[in-house]
Picture: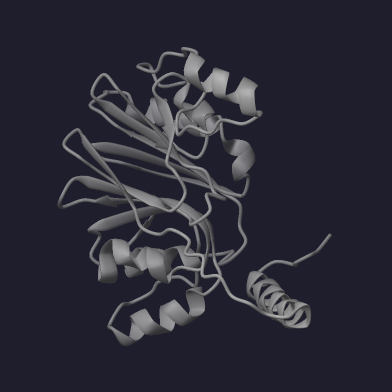
Length: 257
């Protein structure tokens, strides 16, 4: 479980603000911290090492330095995608799944999302276009929140990372509270904090020059099929074994419960 946070803005004390934001999510990544700051954006990352223990620190950059990535999650088919991207001429500096996402975006743009098998939330800063791309996995296993306030765009793995930002004001969102009290969960993209939203599962966003665009990149398709009970058992068993084997990719010990 890693975590990241960041913001657009022109604050003079960007590093001080960013480090305060990062301190609120230290529990998500006790192994390492990293940050990137320029005139437009501040990116902060807390890392829990699972793959690429020695060379997987973030934020991570592509060969030309045009793109910078912060990634939380795991990509189970990253080795196959890595070989594919190397064949296309991409040069890797680490053995991490996160760098595969970065080069995959460089090669395919948002279409890389359809190739990923895993759980993830990430953002990519485009230095040339001064734009931010962010995405969340198919089922929303990994979190990604955002808010716009006073010309600033804040984003992160947890809402609490927004609290130290000087422009963020804590205000209860009554609509989200009503939904929670009715259904015991919030069915809205809104959160309990007014003006703070969760990026929905299977969605990505573009943020540039104060404009935010959100798009859906995948939705499940249900095709009715008729099989005997034994056939369904065999199919489910095959899928479960494949899923478990795929999830075992790691550079640390794997356990089960």
